[in-house]
Length: 183
Image (cartoon, rainbow, N blue to C red; front, side):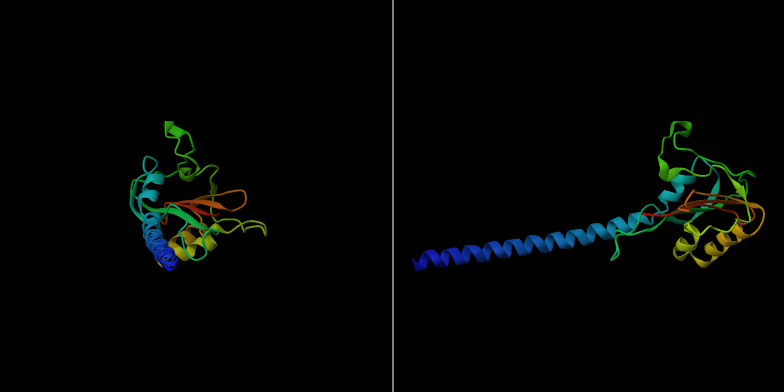
């Protein structure tokens, strides 16, 4: 009888050690996937995809395709595609709708619409401030250019109905941006 109890205890210990090992491997694997996911989120590939075949640009200034996984995830956060316009950028701001040119890229790649001239009108109390919230993720020089584009005449913007999505096109600041503050 003692031998059976010893065997049961030994088998239970082996099983617990196996579960602990599997748990440890899963935790390490999840952390590695999280790091890989977050690295891909901030790739310039998203900004390149938003603006390629739409307008000429020299370089990507900021890009985030989806929200990062962090301690507050899931939460409300920013996605953005910001590029520096090339010298031969068009005078009038271009627009891309979802199914244009047979691309059917989806809502994440829409740019523009009913453009309004800057300076931007003040936001209503029920409107989200995508630029005000998301500016924390941009370098100071990019933030300044975006704010100047919105304050000074000569640029264009489209603000979504609730302020969640903002498109900016500014030849004076040589910048084009798609900024979204959402879930």
